[in-house]
Amino acid sequence: MTEISNYIGGEMSAPSDGAFIDDIDPSTGQVYASVPDSGEEDVTKAVDSAERAFAKWSSSSPEFRHDVLMKLSGLIERDLEKLATAECVDNGKPLTLAKAVDIPRAVSNFKFYATAAMHFASESHSNAGQSVNYTLRQPIGVVGCISPWNLPLYLFTWKIAPALAAGNCVVAKPSEITPMTAFLLSELASEAGVPAGVLNIVHGTGPKAGASIVRHPGIKAISFTGGTKTGEWIASEAGPKFKKLSLELGGKNPNIIFADCDYDEMLETTVRSSFANQGQICLCGSRVFVERPIYDRFREDFVKRVRSLKVGDPLEAETNVGAVVSEAHMQKVLSYVELAKQEGGAVLCGGEQVRIEGRCEGGYFLAPAVIEGLSHDCRTNQEEIFGPVVTIMPFDSEEEVLEYANSVRYGLSATVWTGELARAHRVAERLESGIVWVNCWLLRDLRTPFGGVKDSGMGREGGFEALRFFTEEKNVCIKYGP
Ligand code: NDP
Image (cartoon, rainbow, N blue to C red; front, side, top):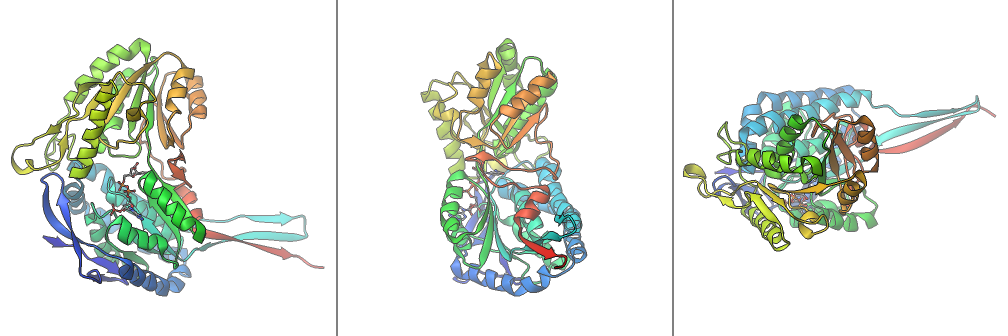
């Protein structure tokens, strides 16, 4: 049993009141670690230590911050195997995925923002020999970073790296359901020479530790990724205190397939965009719209491919679909499959719990589900399920599919498959979505703005957008002379 510690002021520490929560391996259903159930007192200690560290860190040179963050990136790369295994056990995702995506991305996040710190510049405005204005972009102070369980280290570092690169000190909280790699990161932060108090990691539940971060007056900005309902609460709490907010929230992403697409590539990618990480990626396409001339062919080929996915022990190399993150989440996903049936949907495959023999017999495994026969506006097609469930629907025209695609409250990402260039541009322009992928999915360039519209959030991460978020602009106006 590993006992996870908070990381405050550069030291590992137990929560103030000594309370811990169980950390469960979702592939076995067994408790394998304990997580601090931190509260207000722990958050206050973390904020105090961050405030003490701020003056020195915020005035350090970009080169210094670059060197520290590059070192941290290198240490994550060095420990890739260990971190990937920890992520797999904590979250239930296939080890192959953690090795290929989650941990390499954490390496890239620090590398990307370490170098960005050296290139971040601001504007100046000259006024015909009379005056010049220039903009200073200064670190905000102590900022809060709160991340979810689906891509634990990947999303945790996606927030921490730009916050630190911009010269802020951080109080961060990972999901209490998947805290392990954040704990391992705190060990690496010390080894990398991150000065004490610059990065503080407080473990615990959302309503207790998370809410204390949101409420603490010393925390000037909050970068949050998670559910829309939690985002609403954070906005209502932090808004009146005028804290800066970046909210990356839920999605119900359309995957629009026109008959003229590259069929084989579309099919292969659609299996991935539907079920990678057990469908627990905010960018997964959960509503698949297929142009009618290829609908029957697609349904047959897609269901065949989905049936062939191997659901099993996440540690095994041939596993495609691991465990979903928790028993509560499994029950939520199953309840949506029931809802789909009540709404008149036909389950073409999957949608039931799978029992794996041996080590994983107590785990939370689901057979990936494909459902058809539902209207675009039923609850199954409007609400976020965030699991291995997709619906497929035929359409006849661009107008019709745009209406379906845009009919939800969310607008995070969308995928369009077509061989016609003009249509790709036309549809991309009219989709209500922060991100549109054409003939690809999850092809990431970290320089691009990342985020959603409508109830999928506010603000953008990625590139210089994140450095702008984590700094405060100050305009300085200088008159040349009388
Ligand atoms: P939650 O909103 O439940 O939790 C996200 C984080 O917020 C967790 O660390 C959680 O803590 C914490 N939290 C919960 N309540 C509060 C609170 N009152 N105050 C402060 N913090 C709180 O989301 P999930 O973890 O269930 O993640 C899944 C959701 O995340 C999905 O809706 C998904 O779409 C979204 N998501 C969005 C992404 C995007 O980029 N837009 C990317 C990835 C996921 P704890 O878990 O410890 O209780």
